[in-house]
Length: 239
Image (cartoon, rainbow, N blue to C red):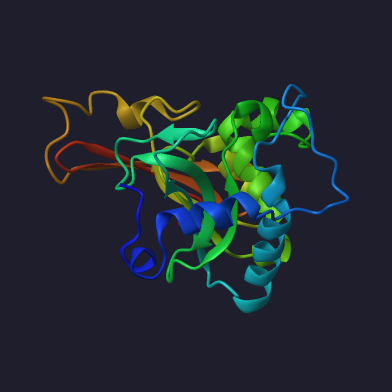
């Protein structure tokens, strides 16, 4: 089930297994951490390779105006402590990576493998989680890790897993706009946007919108569009 057609034509499984047992991608100066340590990273031995890939991504590509945050699955059905299941993904089993990419080309700018909530925010000041929530703080950590790749004036496009009013405000403070769908129970959302929008409320094609002040000369725009079901948007790039 894990075989790749091209690789299977040039290499037997036993040969691949022998190579795999001898292959190590790690810094020999790096002492192996104990698995019971706080923030233990089960992929510690691949960090040199990951860091090399990240450095090359920075060198070879400059994104456009729109960048996006989303999950990407690396298919794997074997034994792995960090293996995740996501029923709505084409690859339902595997290692989940949170990715910042160019929204126009799909080119990856930065990626981080999900290792569990305890490792997610390791090294990030606790004030981020208290101010933005767990998911918002993690997106903030990804943006900070991108450094100069995510510049002033860019637009961060997210889905309803990542969109929040607190994160939008944090991005605005760094001169980054935000655009994305959001949940109807999102904290601080105007009640008149979602009240009565369900069955028997809004009709197909109806639109509700509200605006809230966001700093100087900027607005946070909430839109509820009724398609087959209500679809909520949040934008800080539309006045």
